[in-house]
Image 1 (cartoon, rainbow, N blue to C red):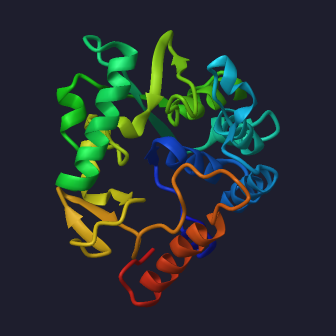
Image 2: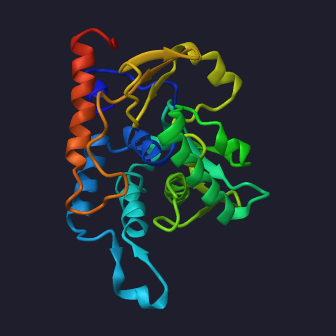
Length: 264
């Protein structure tokens, strides 16, 4: 996103994202991706461990993500720039997961994790089917319509909530979990989105070796990393190679534009 915007790309009428993808999309509408990267590195550099072992004897695990992730969101979505988000002509839809009514919250977490593992190692689907069969549902909130920064921050954190690392949040009086439990590349089923499928670009964060870097599928264009992203998914310490992950995306974009595979 930083490479494309740096070269004059105008943001589309609608962006959709979940988990950290939704956060990055929000940063494009507020302080910019460089600001989000800088604050991420600041928080990570001050963290030596992903969890605090001092309360284990009480049966409690205190993970650093519960502190760092909301603080990171707040570093680029706040009172000072919330007006830019609210007035943007780009609508940002944030996807999160609603637990299965039959399985409840704990059962949904287990089912969602199981489905994720099976899909990642066996089926390699971009848009998995199993979570929905378990009764998990993907829901959306339009971030631009939030009443204040606190509501927007809560929605963005909810979209990445993966207990026990980040606790479940409540959105519209119902529990909300990481949207990746259902689909990490969400595509809302609305008349507006369906009419624009031919002009939809989906940025993937998982590498699929059997597929080309840029390919068309289901009437949409998909763009995946040229290789596995070089950072641990849940590492939030000073050892995290977040700069390498950023560089991979930036270099991939520059290379694609240089070779004419991606044209603004």
